[in-house]
Image 1 (cartoon, one colour):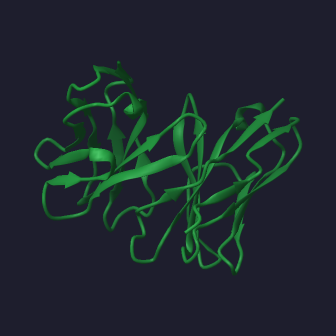
Image 2: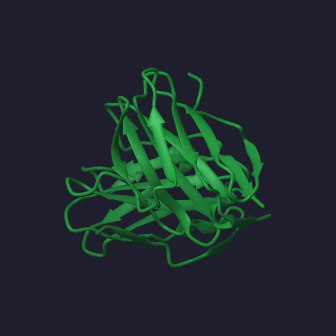
Amino acid sequence: AQSVAQPEDQVNVAEGNPLTVKCTYSVSGNPYLFWYVQYPNRGLQFLLKYITGDNLVKGSYGFEAEFNKSQTSFHLKKPSALVSDSALYFCAVRDMGRERQLTFGSGTQLTVLP
Amino acid sequence: KAGVTQTPRYLIKTRGQQVTLSCSPISGHRSVSWYQQTPGQGLQFLFEYFSETQRNKGNFPGRFSGRQFSNSRSEMNVSTLELGDSALYLCASSSDSHLYEQYFGPGTRLTVT
């Protein structure tokens, strides 16, 4: 079975500082990995994905994520946080060839303080 | 392109009633997935439809059902509503070429009293 863990329910960071939102996963085969963001009263917005290739993936709004196979991690990063980045972030995984649906993590609430 | 639309946005029902939620995917997207989002359980997969066929189903009771029409629009139905069915129901669509890159609608907030 596939699973995702987001170990931090809440992350606070000052505006202008770098931010990291952590995600680890468990799959039997090779993973497809995704990050989504949810603003209040909105659906989820796709940020970025890792399918294959370069371990560093760049996505929307200046976000990037690094795939680390040995640590089974896919942490979301941004060099300089904005107050408008404050939202709920979800990591998701699909085990290639074994599962047909995405499994989402529990979410991390990011608050960027002015 | 217009995004994924869901109707209604908000709904209040009484325990025991049934409800139907609607989702219109992005034009050209044939895959539609449904998710339930609650504070306690997070995001849970309900089912996925592709070309009017259910391709995958999550671990929900038979009270939860869905269907997809020839124009790719999808509906989900919940019968005999329970208080625990109160949730945000999200629909997502994806294209054939990027099947697991899902685009979500704003959701339908269902409250069961």
